[in-house]
Image (cartoon, rainbow, N blue to C red; front, side):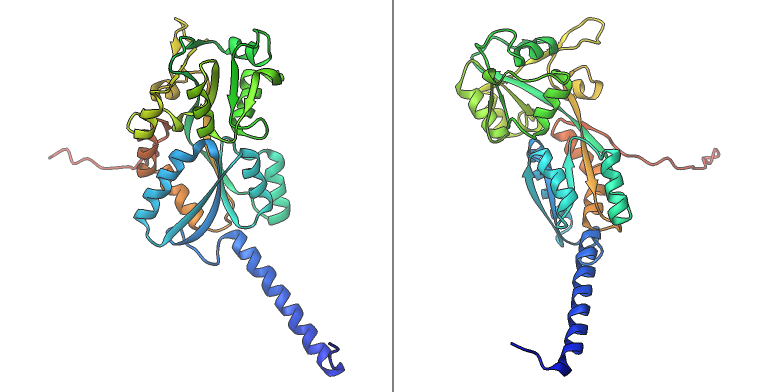
Length: 314
């Protein structure tokens, strides 16, 4: 269709105004100022899949406390969470096992004029699980390293929640292999943490790696039932004076006597306080920290120091 000459300028002005409004709306959505508050609205978040049980519980309690709030969690590999953070305007926050790098902070500062807030809010453990019938339950970090590199034979299979881009794979490469490489003939990848547990439950020669929130809560019926099919291994504490083999208990996480400990981090890309900020405040304070504690993760209870006057005459 050809527009009449007289209508071109008004149409162009309308189109320009429409584009500017669209860009402004997208930018406001990205900042989290348009449609939500710390206790109301709807947001999407991306979460490392290894944290699914504990974050599901946190969201359930948060939403029951604030009926006007809806947090839609998408569980993914850690690398995909960071892709969402950097590239997807609909993703307002992520929960992962690390914070932002200086390069990532510079990206936000240069492109959006601010740096997202981030910090750790709890800690968990990477649990080594073996079949319930296995008697091989004592490991050292050096033994794990040698086996993952194929140096101690190929009798046992190590099972991960994916060979690429997951936080547990990254932890194994950084903290166990110290930058080394897997021997692909002794390593198997499955889709997620639940499949790791299912695989180990059916193979006596399998050794799996999962986050503790999948298997470490003795008050969770599903996890208690799974512990009839698999069991948690002990890892040697190399810095302890008596060099004990330590199980991934809450005390072992908090004291770091259990060696395979990592942080649980939030990153919120809101320039102004929105629902993401409200959810993080919930996680950091008493109720959220009690949920972490009840799930047997390492918790970081926040507290405030106040000056008070004591009436000695009382």
